[in-house]
Image (tube, rainbow, N blue to C red):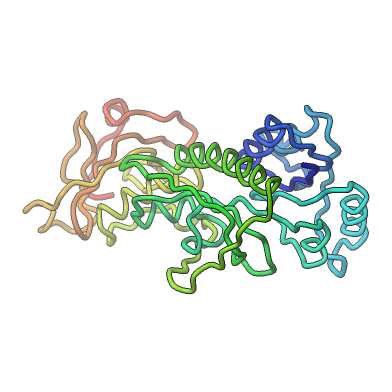
Length: 319
């Protein structure tokens, strides 16, 4: 099938590679403009752009697709290229730009989106992280026919992916990326055999996965230990969970932590009180239960298991 592809990060790169491996004719790729990255802030192509260039595919990087927006000339050029490409449909995965109706209507068979949740749960920008943070036992991939709403399009196919009890957002991302690549290939194979059945999303069970805010990274000891442990997993690696420790000027990043049941000592302690420090972990009282810190990183330092971290830190009474 002759298609266009729109996507930017590694999640989308996996899908593009799967489509190419399946033999689809990807005529054109749209991705976000190059961004500064690394210590030198050198302009760096997105994973999707690099994969497209490696495959010899034309790449467009408009800053907007709105013909009446801030960059109408770039939008018009992208529309003209899509029209000239002779595509049947466009596959979209974590592109990062809103597709206006003028773009959605360009391909004869519309635009299909690879979304990393079981819609209608977790529409929006951060479905992987919010699923972990909320304690969901499963998530998945939904292929939907895009419309003008925020992840509101009719569903074409879905697959379920369990969430492991210690799985981080980074780990779950990689599993979902592979699942997304397989499901879009299977869905396009079905589309080549005949019309796809589109199922409208139910009105019940809608949740919005708000974009991650760096302000969320600081652990709040007034929350439960279970919630804090899930946040550590959900915010790994970005924006990262952090806390402040006495004797250190900058916040400390928490890479791994586990929730322990409440004890008599933790129930009597003020949330944020340090209950125990040893090679097994740093135990901190929360509003409900104990958070055991297992892997930490000082500002400018390396990730360290707690048994190494505590050797260079004098434990105070509270965080």
